Length: 505
Image 1 (cartoon, rainbow, N blue to C red):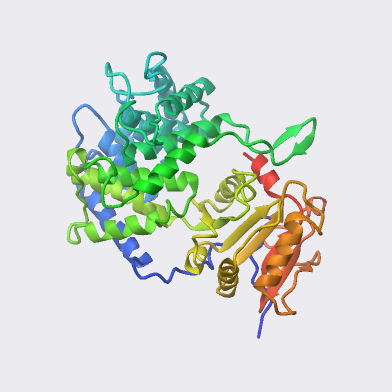
Image 2: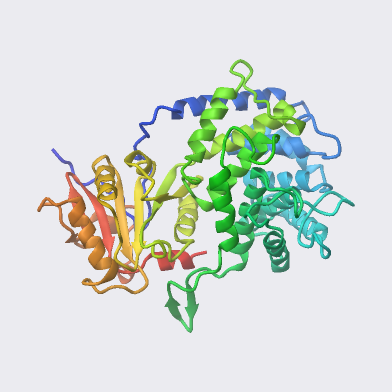
């Protein structure tokens, strides 16, 4: 017999704890967890007494910072004695080379964001001074007296991104010059190479996508704004053509077995894929489930006895470098998925507020004090098992949504197997007999033709209004829901919420 309703209230928070596990057999969560543990054990064993790992010439502190960042991403706490020893070692190195300074900055931001602000601010000023101010590589970073390159540039931007996340300011001119650099140096086919005009590679195209997203996000105002005290939703969106072209190139060239366009740097490339997936929140690259495919490859290629990985030449021949890069990819799987935004037809009507879930996820991360992630899932590609990777499926739009019969069956199976749908009508389309309102109600009828499964208005005492904390009645929205069995499995609000999440940068 049902004992109350097991709800996933969306107004304040999602619950990821009930997320059903994928039934695919190609790679299991337990295999990834054990692989991460073996890799962490190997890096711990390789650390020297002074807190460092053996360094590469000319990059003091670089490998130590890379290994420390990998341990932190794999869940080793900052208070761990070995991490503290590494931090003490890194504090003794002033920035001299872009890679090492960038990794050092990311470690400080991840481990001790409050107490390390002075060091991070010092590094930010150094990066701003080192950025090229003119010439063909204006806006880029590189080696001393060597101009600039796209690899050094992406690491500088990753460091500046993490610095700004802990409230260390970065000059807007720095972001603008970097944005201009990446837009100017993109190849005609959408890719990037190591230098402008070089043939494109997977690793450098990942660098371009990541860097464009970071720089544009720091400069753009978002898709909603305040004008004379009034909220304006669904604003004109900035052009994403460069990113779209690069993602199309990646979809065509994608592989986890080699770095497209380059026979080396496989693990460096996979770390780039992880960043693209994390910053775009795309579950798929083209039709490739990039994390599952990459994790299966890494688990299989790990040395089971010693726990290390070995890459494809150059710096990746160093098993400490290879292991750290592999762990940084695998660690993505440690972040619980908070929600997925469903990409649906009409093609221009599913993503009016592009930072809505990103901002909401960041807010919940601070409340729960743990790292989370969210995803974009294409309804045309996703099967029920793919949808079930997220405990909450967010559907938004202004026009009548279009779903095939197969997609409707997948949505119903998602709900029947424990998933939760939250939907909203955005952009002011609140007429119940038009647009998204009419279309979503029709979708519910297609999903649940049974007469007992109908949208009903939820009463004020419904747990959706108070599950984590009671919502101030002044800011409540009219909610409708569908009860499936013992729980409310669908909640619909015929008003805009994503607009306010978009504003909460």
